[in-house]
Amino acid sequence: MGTGSTVNKFLNIIHEKFVKNDINIKAVSTSSQTTNLAISLGIEVLDFNNVDEIEIVIDGADEVDPCKNLIKGGGGALLMEKIVANFSKNLIIIADETKMVKTLGNFPLPVEIVKFGSEKTTNHISNLLNDLKYSDFEIRIRRDQKNNYSTEESNFILDLHLNQIKDAYLLNRELMMIPGVIEVGLFLDMASKVIVGRDDKRVDIF
Image (cartoon, rainbow, N blue to C red; front, top):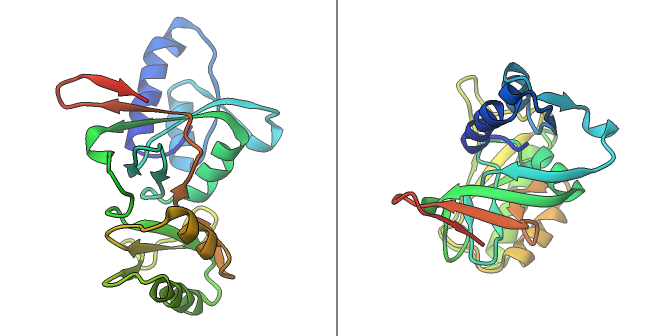
């Protein structure tokens, strides 16, 4: 199970359709938030290291393009979500129609970085974006009420406001080469299926 409001709704459906009918559901979680909710709903949460195989990952997305490429990480769990998604046979994304875009990038791109040398890493990313001819971009360190937001793995997240990503594959590759960058919220060629809910209650699957 991924993390976020979409997954929370899906967990409640699992509880109603399966757990209440005495059907045992076992899952791996990508955040303490998901873990706590799943356990409260009677879903058994397994240690990821003790799992031989994951059949299906269910998750949401912040943006989805026509090729099923995604921006994820708005909820701050992109590192664990990508690790689990990469290990699974099928990554199924559930999204509403507002998340569908022609080109990724209107949603700020999350980049998880280590705390040590974070300002240097931020400067390195800024120089890279200039080299890649991005203009009018902004890099913001994510903050919470206490100050800088910290992930469950005790890292920082930078949100890259790019407006439009020109070449997602190139950008992902170049960002991941920067020392200090842990993971990038671009999920490319990973989604097996996208389920899109429409305002008129239609559902599209591609």
